[in-house]
Length: 233
Image (tube, rainbow, N blue to C red):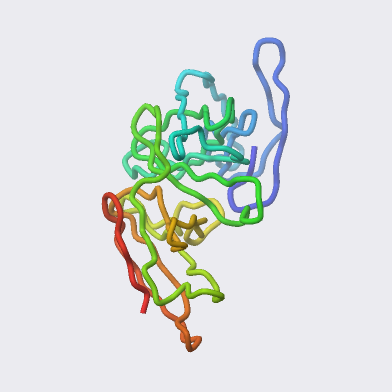
């Protein structure tokens, strides 16, 4: 149990019947996690006593992340963010379990969702994303590509920085657990160009870079279906 907006947690173990009880808690908003999965949000009023009943394992789904025809490898951690404002799950993050290379199991959200994940390696501070179809299934990572087509990201210069700021009309600064936009990882194509990929069509991507003179460049693009070549100048 975590108090929203506070770095304070309470832990519990259930008895043989699956019951648990917390010490008296301060009033406020709380997130309840079971085995790392957020299962409920609770609002407590002063002096209130609350009985909560919930069932686990009824709304899970499996996903297979595929890259170049093979299961995606080296995934370190992943979570699913619900982006449907009409859903009871809106703004909630569900931790995904890695059950085999590229295969994840996570709570099935109600409404549109975005999967965010990191991999082992030098770029673990950056995140990869992919839109999640209803029911999960096989998801190809190399979709909806935004390809940098110069003059930024010049040889020897710093790479372009891509920040995902909006998905399905939802500002990620309002719902992303770390605050602000999501700084995206990228890959290189055969020509050495930077490629940002996996974002749902209609997402808004903020690109930042520098030209040959060191002048800072910035552009926001709307992600299309398939591949889009973008010049940052």
